[in-house]
Image 1 (tube, one colour):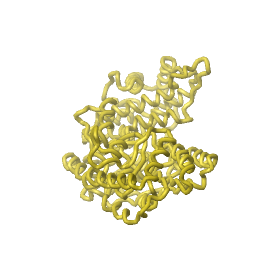
Image 2: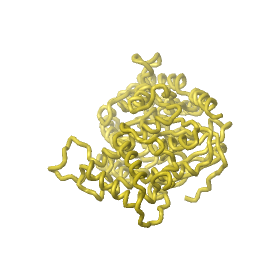
Image 3: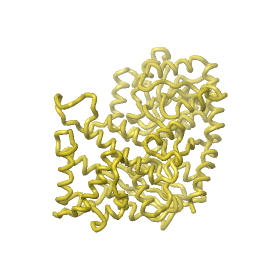
Image 4: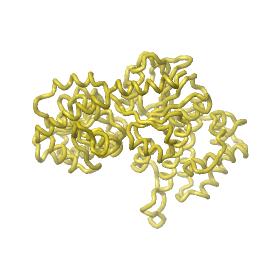
Length: 504
């Protein structure tokens, strides 16, 4: 990548972004873009954390004028390795490092010296274990072999060795970023994970407040990714393996991310979630209840309201999925539901609007599935584009995800006059039916179905498309609810109060 980034000596608010804006489109990235542009009175900075340079194809957003500083860092092969040289390693420092490892391994349940999490302890061998010692010292080798003998239930030491190395190496990179980052008056991370860990380090280094806005529960989403990943091996044979147990390396990665989440919760001054169910999950995962607050997403009502007049009188038999083509969006269930609907609606079509390059293998599987079900001519992968260009031509928004927070695409569709059929994930039930046990007075803005069930997804969509009166009632409820509860101005006013209190 050859983009020239803006640089500054200091900022008001430093955003910490893992795998989102400005290199990934939609969802959280759209929210970040909205937040920066919504507060032109503040000077923003941003740190983008990605996987590998080659995984991103350039900026997806025009950078706002008040984004005055931007850095991009890559956690897989993007850092400079220390020179290889034999070294003994400092035994007391590695004893402390073992405490930190045990803290990660046991989900934050054991005690350790909090000074270990000062960035300098990862960078200076006089303060702790620097990266070179972790990679090349005899003490590091001894620690890893001891951990393998004591805990690992997988027979492959080679896989254990590289798992520990790959899992822990980004910690030193985060410490280096924290040590070199320009000053900010407030740090704002939009997830836990590595961005949240960086936020915790920056908070400890500077004493400045850390704000966490968690759009989806990061540890839950990483758990789903880890269970579906094929790069995490299980080397046990059929006699060693208990089918009811998660493989050792999967469980190790899950505990690692869960513990980083607790660390971010502990360091945060305020923890924002999108809906009450997510707030309750944060508390269950270790967040202090008094720190938590719910602020739903919001959309530009006026922008999308102009699309309503462009809709035809009758809902077209076009089902639109807006999202990345990745496993967590369960595009395969969407494709299967189109196959079922095709038996009843001869002209039915399915549009998938979102980037396809994030998981090429999954995209290939989706296109192969469409071909095998004889619906490849009905399914169109339209790539990344402005959803406003497709909403007027669609009959329903379909969301087949197996995990969500409070999806912006549903709010945007509602504002454009498009009802939705969603899976029962995140805040979708609240969006479709309203708050509280009995919902609200607006009525149902579509339907909510169980995950990974193409038949019920197709049935719900068919009921709305075949009943004009029901579709119109759902449209009216969608418009009324988004205008009342989910406007961009309402969201920005709530974040404005937070910023004014903490940017000082």
